[in-house]
Length: 206
Image: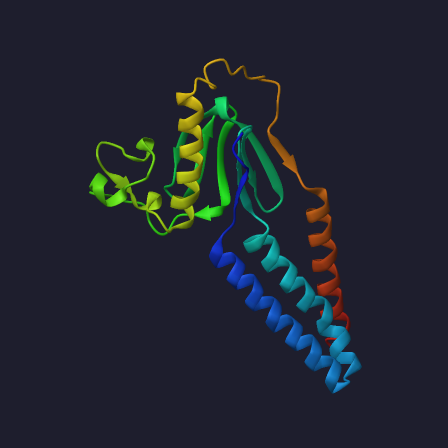
């Protein structure tokens, strides 16, 4: 049994860390200044900013296991068993076309506008065979890109299971709904945004 691989945006991690450092620095500065009214007014918005950046750029992930692919997006999680996956695309982001529909991975955006470039196989050693379409490689498939690296992991595991015959007998339940919303994230976002607006409006005239 292969290990579960969890992929997150490297850019998202750096951005989140940078924003949280700025937020903490601002909160410390407010505390040092001793301006109670200013501190009360901006604490909630600063905390909300840090949370939203984490929610959008750090929390999303692509989890690849023997059981299938899990896409952890901003407010919902999609669990896709391997037999359900029909096609993998990286035009704008890692996108899985499945029996249940089309699903985009928030954690694996493409490097830029999609175009097909002539890439010899010797210049892309190690990539799964399914990466190549008519001898070309999509820009979103390129190594060292968020979508390309995620697609490589997904396709490699898919091909391994296919070649081992593990997908041939895969039976799918059409009544299964692979999408689950995250009420905790939704509620937390709503509370923080409401608190921020209330704080800013309540102290705007002071």
